[in-house]
Length: 383
Image 1: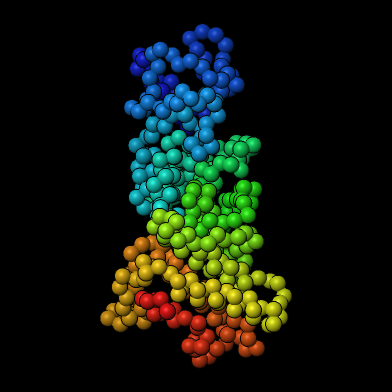
Image 2 (image 1 turned 120 degrees about the horizontal axis):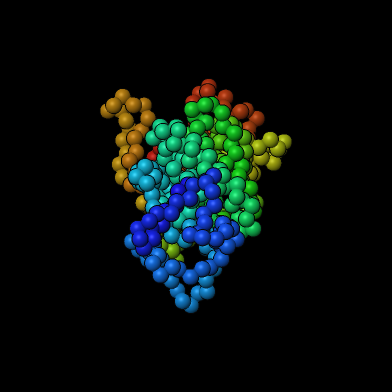
């Protein structure tokens, strides 16, 4: 990691990991403890950024930065390669993480924080480099990120660091892309995110995701849901948490309301996956009421969803010889909510408690209309 600051004479001071400690023109080496102490700025010192840092005289100086923008008092001057990868993330990859977040926090807020948070910047570098196929740059950025992560996880404030949590969920996407290449998913970052969430999670979950911590939780939820479906196992999620109600448009802005509707379907789908793949031994009389409760939740969501979640166009797909219907939606979170609704409906059909397994009915005579509470194909108008 290289940090540059231009002095009044135009000279550059560079520190590279493994280099000798910096010393002044004369005198002993400066210790880390001394560097953490507030010192008056040199009269000739000018920040390398063209924008001066904001200073509020009413707030006393704190040598430890706020956790939301921690670890770098001034924005890092990016190299061209770093800037290109950060731009690539913003233009192409942030929407992966924001697919149920209408406020797009991972696309808009995270890049702005990356230049003042080295661990977040390195996480983005590893993800973007991996996606562009630059395996060497991805691995080096990942190694640097892990080195920073090990230090930060030893802090007493780790449970309050929302940006660190965001960095870990980004590393999880890097881990998933790497697993696609080598066929081995060790889920280390998924486990790390789970541990950090459980350390800082309150008793409730807000589907409107008003802050970075909430946004990171829903990214983690979808990552767990993906792994649960692939491996046919229960999601590593605490379902004892209380899901807060969807805010009405009168009490929340439209983006928060849209986010809440999408994330609520994500939660419902996750609870259904948990029901289907749970190893708990339950007889028909115990499972059937729970199945009905979950089926009602899907039905209620489908009936009550806002008109904005309807497709802007739909067709039967016959013109292209496609056996499946086509849908066009206006936003990513509408598509994801639609997909989770369909997945939830399919799982409820297959795992419906019955003396005869629903999967046999599906294979033998096709899915019967009475097995489906609401028509999963007719999505244009709520029933």
